[in-house]
Length: 361
Image (cartoon, rainbow, N blue to C red; front, top):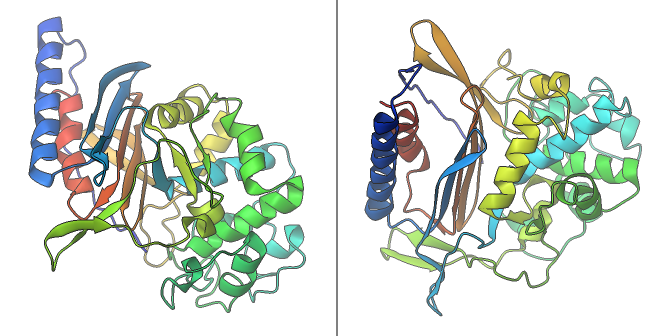
């Protein structure tokens, strides 16, 4: 799937806001969120943190509709393609340690790779979805219909022919991150789930996050999708989300994702400032450019005629899951939206209305 987002927000900054006005802004923010929740029958968790302080957190609807289990703040959700940002960070950690060169090709780090792009596609092109490699899902969802290990997914679904010259066109593609995951496994000689745990989850005390492994995950929200024909929410398609691996196979909670965002953007615990700047550098000199950087979309938000703020958005959706991890860098604000119901929400419409409230507009 390809995400194309156009987000133009006119915002007003007030340097010093009286306490009474701050209270009013929070009230308007809560009202905006409540209107969205009611209008779209939202099921999930919304959490907003600003300068290290949580200013909004609330869960709505049901984690399991059959047994009437409510969503809670500590409910775990599939986070879908937010996984890609974790994978990108793991790659940039190795770049920082000079164990990966972004300009080297796949073959350099994965010599057994048999795809046409082996000696043509660079690591940076994989990160920015400009590899030209055929879409993992070009023939439908067959890749998720049975259990497959990472080698099987790589060989059967991510080692095909090139559909564009590397570095010339943006094409959002899960295959790129399947390959990056295998490169990480090859360098560390560990499964992706284990190296992710050791290098990000444990250091950040993200104990409620992990990678699906075909087993039962405690406190995990059941996923549903809106069937437009029947006009009702239905159970998620029984696919193997595990096969998304480094491109989309993680689960997490809102609090854990806040910890990740804080460590990445604010505290620079995961990668340094230089690497973060590179990660956030949008690849907009290609065909079909879409403000896509390394595993996320990187935007300029116009605050006023003289000032632009930087936003980094990592959405994700897999059938019954719709998620968002959004960071407003200069405002030191993180917005987490995790939903276990797809098709009823208008995620970007919601954010377009909510973000100005954070600026008092």
